[in-house]
Length: 131
Image 1 (tube, rainbow, N blue to C red):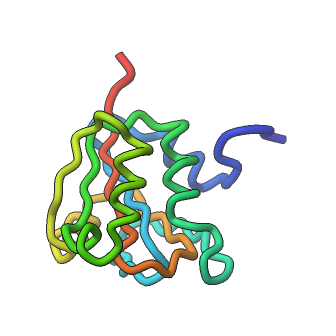
Image 2 (cartoon, one colour):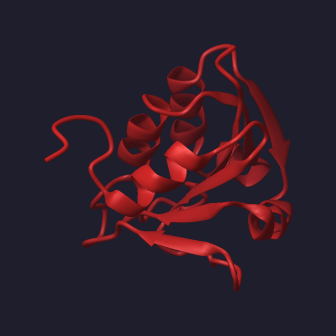
């Protein structure tokens, strides 16, 4: 039995298989998942698990070189944007429209669906390299 890190088998497998510039989307309960993109559904009930809980767990195992966040996040749910900046200090943060975020999500390795009910609690994590 694995005793630390990401315990969800599907998510752990995706994170372990990520390469440089691969994208992983972490989204709220309402983010549409494009056809053909792997869905990793962690949602249990409203708010469980939370978006930031999932992002934090992933950040501890995956090297991130860039975040893509919808501009709407900073206008509607600024606390989410501020906490993303705190989790990833010094990481390049690119603001895009929510429509662009949904479009780019079609190129992701997977979309992680959380139980988050906060509007625009979505991020595209672009993986980096550790060397």
